[in-house]
Amino acid sequence: MTSAGIKARFQRDGFVRIRNILNFENDLKPVLNSMEFVMNRMVLRYVPRKLQSEITELPFKRKYQYLTKLSIPNVNQYFSIRYSQQNPTSNSDFLACKSIFNLIKNRKIHKCLEKILGSEIASNPVQNSRIKVPEKKLKFDNLHDGLLGRTPWHQDAAVLDKNGQRNTDLVTCWIPFTKTKIKNGCMLIIKESHKLGLLNHGRGPKGQVEIKNKELLDKIESIPLEADVGDIILMDKNTIHCSLPNVSKNFRISIDLRFNKAGQPTGREPLPSFYVTSKNKKNITVTNYMQWIALWEKAKEKCISRKYLYKLHVPTFRGKNRDLAKVI
Image 1 (cartoon, rainbow, N blue to C red):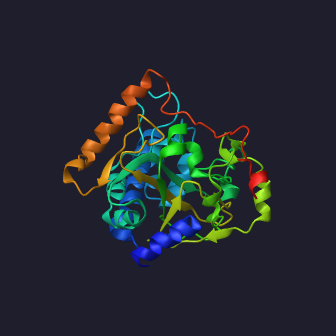
Image 2 (image 1 turned 90 degrees about the horizontal axis):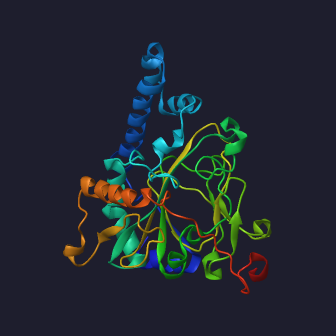
């Protein structure tokens, strides 16, 4: 797709799928290797010694399933690419591996983003990893957990603070690590919905942020956004989307990174943001993995005393036509 095509389609539709941008071996497999390294460390910590060799030799899927059945506190945080939202401590951690940093700094992704955001781009700290297991393997309580099960209809701007919702040009970069089809829970997206602006949201069954009156969206045509490994999907912060349940027998693994125009609020202060591209090389101050880790550690220290990393400012507009029922 040409540069002009990327920008035009993004502005028209609110999203653009760009085919075969990333290389699995060089760009994606290192992240999966990092996850498996963490799993192997967990085996040594939580699995009885006589079973450790056997469990370590299991393939990725079966090893993960085994570990999630154990009584491991906050097991999913081991694979999260951000700190847990509440009660940070000096021991709080996340999957802060070099392979994630390299993905954030990936020049092939930046070149696509530059067509939309321009040359001055910053990494945004709103980032997630999602290991969606087959729904029949999920506990009932996790069916509506957006990182494990279904993700409800929402707009990404709704998880920013008010400053970010109003003043940040945010682009989501959604990256599949497994082939993503309808059966294993691909995204559903409503074309041109970003033109509606930010809508009223509420809280779902698991505290998930979701659009109010979301059942009305069943009357609107949505597009299942299937993707191959190597593709990326760039999405406007106000594009309405959700994910389908994973009714297959296989995992669906993805990461969503976010970027914004440099100098704008992140919507998650004081979590770290830094230039990834700029015409002025002096702006590129984070050039290696250890500098990136230092930013997150510094942010964590600021958040310990207030006992949270960020608060969700769920958008609820009063006296304005921001209800879905009034705009469709």
